[in-house]
Amino acid sequence: MVSAHGRHVMVESPDGARRICHPRGKKNQAVVGDQVSWLPSEDEGTIESVLPRRNLFYRQDEIRTKSFAANLDQVLILLAAEPEFSERQLARALISAEAENIRPLIVLNKSDLSPLFENAWSRLQPYREMGYDVLPLCLKPAASSTAPNRGVCELQEKLANKVTLVLGPSGVGKSTLINHWVPMALANTNEISRALNSGKHTTTSTHWYWVDTTRQTALIDSPGFQEFGLHHITPTQLAGLMPDLKIHLGQCRFYNCTHLHEPGCGLTPHINSSSSAQRISEIRYKIYTELFEELSNISTW
Image (cartoon, rainbow, N blue to C red):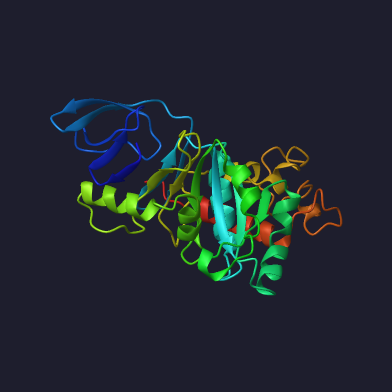
């Protein structure tokens, strides 16, 4: 499935042909990236079932669950030197990806904005120490720069032969990134929107684009978000989904240590330690404690 709007979805056949389909029943369970079985009905089709998924990247708050896409190889989390990124939102996206065993790729755009970029790049040092791929990038419209854009070739190698969800807040250059690799993205999106009767392209829908003619590399453009709920994660799962905390698990005096206040915790001595290989930054630990409290207070009734 390559796009959706309410109960209308766009399905692509193995030969590349696309057609509008409708789910059987009242609720559409399919998301972009799903493989579905469907039956033709006149010039449209009906989705009969959703095939088993490798993974599903989603967020969940008290009110609803928002699914981004399924069957992903990686999630590209796009940040920028400006506007200043939220490390808490970054952590939430990373935790959600870790929970589904989806490889995260952190990209910091607008490397031409010095010294803002240097400050933002230094804030990402803990994530490089954790082993995450963190790439610099400079994407400018072709008319504004004749020099090669920084990081484009390296990022292209990371995208090749993979299905990548592009995730990021407004203003970081998400549309510029999509349009760089898929110049006809806007036209393709408008065509799909008209077919689905969903009006002009907005950030409320998710779209799949093939980058190459052999259909081996795909980018999925996702809507922006202000909040990223993790209500599908339990408090006791958190530390195991944060690599800088995970390496210290099993070293505590108590098997059910929450790493908040217990004596003999094997994790807390590493907060701001001198060893970069084992260090937990103060902000990362604070994010952990905030999330632990938030998830512990979720109502179960």
